[in-house]
Length: 312
Image 1 (cartoon, rainbow, N blue to C red):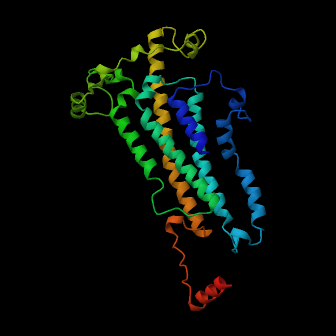
Image 2: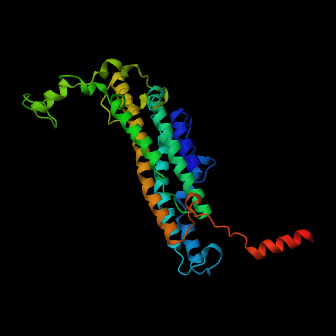
């Protein structure tokens, strides 16, 4: 699944989108899309695992499985943890399939951090897959160190550039709604807290002009009129529609980054499940932890026989 995960992150960063979403994907049927089929097979593997589990428990000890009560259930546990991660991959792919997309310039701000989290997350999946094939335990090093470090960098970047992910107009001084009596602003802040908030108002508003974002023609602005959608007031203006789209497009980027961070969090359960499997199934130690085999030195009689063979 690591290939599909990396492809999804790279496609999102590079703004590779679907012109039209295949109908088979919309109805969750088998499709020719390799990314879709990749995580779909992981999500739907439960019945196949149960069938294999039923056969495996009757297997006599053989080969690498020379032990009674072999921990087959732990293989299923690892698969379940991987499926838990696949749900996040499925949700990330859904961001690419969405009609509302974040503009390229906003994605570019987080490009390096998103790309690193994607590559490091894929590396963890690839390493676990290779170790499972070799039936090899985890090493002493922390397998998740790099991906956790990359995720922390992404979170720090989000903290610094958070104004990109929200509507800046909600930060305008004096733009707070008032209560029914018109005396005090509504919200979670009291007067002292609100004063501190306004004093530390972000200077990034001067750098941001969300009105420059154009509303795509295929977003269906015409469908937002009162004639087609009775839930929308007739007095709605094109400017309001544009603001709505700007806010929604920014939130789509927020959704993608949040799902990516959640995927990394779920990797911990996958690594823990694999480590438990390695211990119970007696996987071999990694090469760097294996003790070197002592080569016995040749004794007197061995040297004598070698000498006689030489003269023969």
